[in-house]
Image 1 (tube, rainbow, N blue to C red):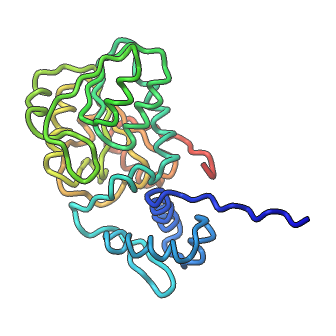
Image 2 (cartoon, rainbow, N blue to C red):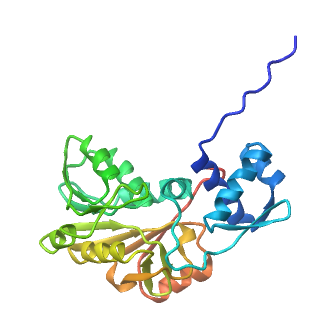
Image 3 (cartoon, helix red, strand yellow):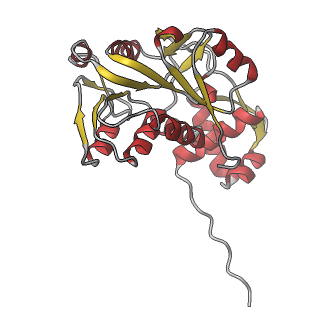
Length: 272
């Protein structure tokens, strides 16, 4: 009797496109067939994904494939859904490590970023009583399900484009009145001594969050060590620890140590 054909497991478009970007980040370039084999989609699906990513400025098409190019625009941002899946294993590992830095009865500011989201998920598994302040609707929703957490949102304008976060006033003024134990934030780019983001209002809010906290932990996957984005929100001297994954290069790690910042490098399981 002939065995039934194996059913292809469909991957949501955002995750599939993040997988394409990750494959190209590691390999530089790939053919459509190579991407289809690596990710498990059909060639026609991969071709449509590449067109979408090319139109978004993520990559350049080549004959029969694609080439990843660093975005030239300082204000370039990945789509929120793609960003949530990009470097996912690294973000989960970083989140688990960062969660260990949070102690019972602390007040914690969780900034709206996909890596910070993984810190929140890992922290929620611990038996802690916390006061949580966040400008992320998604983080607030997860946090509200933890009975021992008190959740505060600072207010502001809902950011368009599926980001589900609040920026601007009255949130910025709110943080001028707050004295939190710890701030956990991400960054769009870490370049030399500076941490940057693509939007002025995001950088401004992060700056306020850091200033209102006794200590600051920055969580960034290794792809974030790149050319600066549009606006600086702090220097390395303003933070207490940077947590990243083992994809960081020896040169990048040496540069961070030269600036005197505490760096924790988290291993990521192969194939995770």
